[in-house]
Image (tube, rainbow, N blue to C red):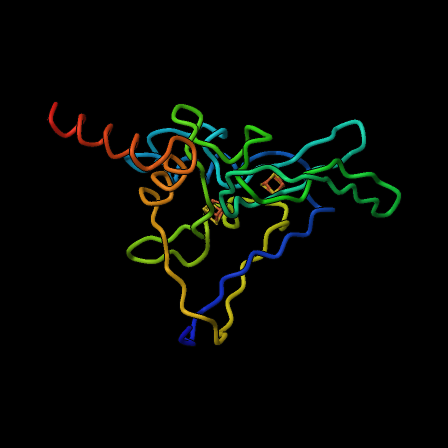
Length: 179
Ligand code: SF4
Ligand code: SF4
C-alpha cells in the first residue's frame, strides 16, 4: 500500500485529573447534533467517561473502530492499586455494551476529532474540559494510505454486517421507491 504523509492528531488523557463532570460529553454531542448545537444528549457523545464512583475511577475514552463481534476474553487492569473493570479502556463500538452507539438507531459512533470546515483549532471535548485532562497534539507521520469511511458508510457497513447485503439493498430500494 502507498505511503503518504499525514498529520496525526492525538488527545493525551491525564485520567487522574478527571472528576467526571461530563462537560466533554455534552460538548461533543452538541457539536455533532444536526443542526449543530441543537441537542446535547451525552448518550450521543463520541467520548464517554467510564465511571466507577466507589473506586474514584473516571476514565475518559474516545470512540474508536466499530466491531461486529465481541471479544472472546476480557482484560482487567490494576494500576496504582485500583482495579479497572473489563472493557474499561476499550474504544470499540461493539455488541457487548451500549456505549458508542447512536441511541435511536443503534448505529456506531466514532470520534472524528471534530473535523469541520473551517477546521477547529482544537476539538470540542478538549476545549470544554476545564480540568486540563485532555491535551490536543499534532505531529506529522508517514503512514499507509487508508480508505476512509464517512458516517453514512460506517452505518451501512454495520447494517450489512448485521443483516446481510441483500436485506440492506432490498430495504434501500424499497425506501427509494417510497420517495
Ligand atoms: S475529538 Fe471531537 S468527536 Fe472526538 S470525542 Fe472529542 S469532541 Fe467528540
Ligand atoms: S470535561 Fe474533563 S474533567 Fe469533565 S468528565 Fe470530561 S475529561 Fe473529565
